[in-house]
Length: 81
Image (cartoon, rainbow, N blue to C red; front, side, top):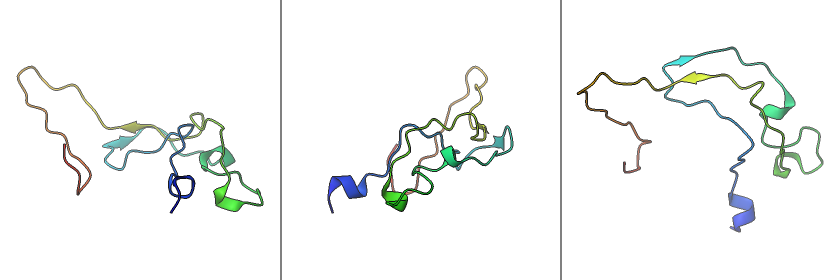
């Protein structure tokens, strides 16, 4: 598979952390939330460059530890820290 076809990362999009402890605001649906252009003839192979920060929910996934507390990071299964 070519790199063009398998690279689906879009740096213009904010995504919700699946390990978030809380969600700070409700999702407000907007076409900019999708990584592709809605209505484009290439469907999901198109690329949307709009920033979606105004519509994406906030995630609380980090707190500062107390002094002397060891931090343990959780990684995605199958990856190494």
